[in-house]
Image (cartoon, rainbow over all chains, first blue to last red; front, side):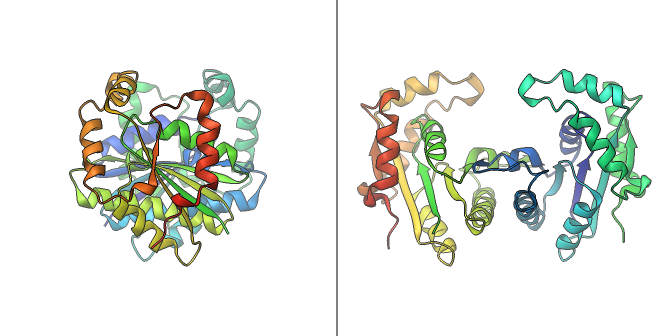
Length: 175
Length: 175
């Protein structure tokens, strides 16, 4: 049975790097960037954090892609700012295809987040929104078992992080 | 009723540039790059021109995205090497949502194609495959009314090309 990994967390926490490494560690795997899916809508697009209909469009697109990949025997890694309600929604919509849905919320301290954000090209910098996102996760009713703290992690430790995500049952999205 | 534009043609003919300009000319529009969708499958991916199942996965992903966009009132521009059979398949799969499917096969002479191909970064160069694709279009039973010759076109004329694609009924995918 295929596994769907949802890698979440605030902007700047390392979702993209971690997702790429996870995809590479799997044998037959797809990588879905929620940001890329979001920007397929070009003209008339609204910011998904300000528009419920835009956010719903994005999640339905992610769902459709994920279902197709799973149906074709492919594991899926979703890289997107995903709150618990959205993760549960996705799990429910995949229930007929797979029970293996893994939800990991990468987290780090404020200082590291802002430092990483400033390394991005200016038009991709999120600034204060990084910190707002941390607060939103804190207020989302997130079960702390889904948190993966990357504070002390450096590039050499990415393999340990990937191993944790793939084998630690605590991230399995249960009822 | 929404319109779905399929912009096809061999690699190097200018699909991407033309698609971007078309997306910008529409009020509420999405851009689907078939190549980007294809590369969402990372590990275990086969070349779509060598694997029917890979090609089928890609087209089902494009279809799913297109249906979601159309259902949300968004015009769609698909940028991908699309043969007539694939265009007709997509039209049939969208028939319950929209009858407006436009199919344009951009074409230019061999010399221009190879010249443009050489302007790409090495790992994106298609080389001889550009010419093989022209031959495949010639052998695909393509009705010549869907062809749009870009031989003499330069950047200044892109607006004329977009106007042609949006208003010329000959590109409408009929039975």
